[in-house]
Amino acid sequence: MAVTSPPGVRPPRWVFLDQPPAGWRRWSPLAVWATLGAAAAYVLTFNPTQPGPLGPCTWHLLFGIDGPTCGGTRMFYYLIHGNLIEAARHHLAALVGMLYGLYALAAWSGGWLFGRRIPLWRPGRRAIAIYVAAFLLYAVVLRNLPWAPFSWFYVADPILGR
Image (cartoon, rainbow, N blue to C red; front, top):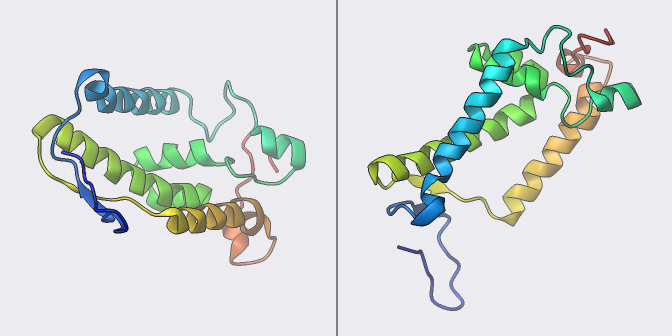
């Protein structure tokens, strides 16, 4: 059942996923879970906190500072090991986004597996723009400031050592 609104009325921010889609889209949650499982298997096999097959972060290698994706794999490593403090230290903005993403995936999967109506907040353009701006401000500027409290977020690349 699609959520529709009369002309001129804004659609609700909360929607309920009450009927699974048909065709290949029905199996989409399974593909996302498989991808997350593969990422977790990779991170468990090749510890990103130690030198490994990927080498140093490209952004860090080119510019000498942490960039938008630097620390994301290490954040995921600490997250799947249950160490939220280190996960937040390695990439706080990505951790916040990941928590929303995991809830959205759980809501999607719950509707897919059990046919249960689970509320899901769909952020508007303004909320997305605020998150993206905060993400970039944190990832490119605040993490690279050399004084406290921002220096806590700087993590040296395990391969480059800087």
